[in-house]
Length: 633
Image (cartoon, rainbow, N blue to C red; front, top):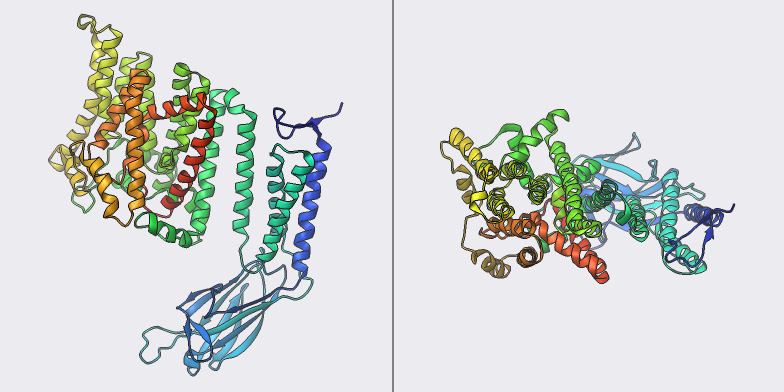
């Protein structure tokens, strides 16, 4: 029996291809990649930087300066030289150094690979030839240390004057193993992506080989100038896209069971956002130049602790600090930003999770948010599948994942817990489990102030189930009183702790957010772009306002009452505020919007392609800005 592999899947494949041919093609790609990398490193490296006149891989310096004959920079006494991908063996570095003003001597040392080379007193400009070791990745990393001196009229502590930096590698330098592995991974992923295209085998092989050759040529040209981690992100992103494409092409998600389908979609979403965060944090300084034009505030992160920042710390921004502070030390009112404005259920869940995780509240907040979101997606699938079918349920989960601010569901915010409780309330109402719906509404009101709006929905749904006959009303009608009791419980706590049950309303005024007539928010959204530097962010919030309000109005007529009315009532409190900067986050609990989009995608083929193509770039950009501390919503 001959085993064959259909690639692309059988629905679009031209013909079945024997497995051994694919194995041979992948082996050939690996061999070509290894040979290309080996040849690239056999050629000697010849780099030269005019430090004062062009960007140079030297960190810990002042700005460039120039005299009548050459340009230069000064170090601050401790500078770091980084030459990436130099080779697999020691390299010869040539540094043109001098003392401040070429007349003041400073004692200098060069430290690399655990060894320290004493350069002595550096005064006149001269060239130092240094044999430097390389790291396991083939990089030159050397600390240039010196004393400092002050010149008349200059308050800066000046170290060495640096004029030029050059690197010459000996011939026949072996490539570092990391570079070999990078080339192989890049070649394999690009070739596999080309294999997805519905083309003849020869055309796909040529296209994949060409793409791999371009990647290897880029690796060759970047030797000594670009670090390898960005290429690994390229390879990881290519593999990620490959997996997503296979998932979509196979149609497995539409056939799989609820848990497997939702789990796969959640995993793709979570890994994709982690990849985007890693890229954004690595190029934090460059991205911040984009953020300046789009939003406000922002941080510049170093590359130390990249893994922790990517997985946890980058998702603890802005309001996250208040949630973790409440979980750790409790509520405060007398401060510039009183955290009593935030409702207690999410911090109450964070606290025991943090105790189980050794007291790490940031990790606990992110973990709770992600688990709550996964549970919300599973329940959303069950809810929508029961009412509209599995196909619509899959697309509803997909749009909940792809809405441009969905990254808040995976950040240390209460949005994911609120979504879980909203979906659970609708699920209970649709099944006429009135007391369960009331308890869920009680918890929702302890999570977000709009949760109290579940009460009128619950009362109307119960009356409708009784045929609008008042005489048929029984004890389950009292379940509608449970959501207001949630807010009442929080107000009673505030009365006990701060002497007033309205402390959270006082705190909202400190946050410049007040209850306003319904025309104030749309008017502010129209006016603010002309008065704010971060006007693209205001426009972004305005698009969410128009889209979700329009969809909520449509849902009142197109969907069952539990969907349409819940979304309209839950969106009412944030849309009656004066705060324009968080609209795109507050509307995320509008479940009916995801169902309407899912119905459109299930009906029209173009919608299921156009919508993700519009939403995914916005989601990735917003997430990359958020992890760098820029205000998104």
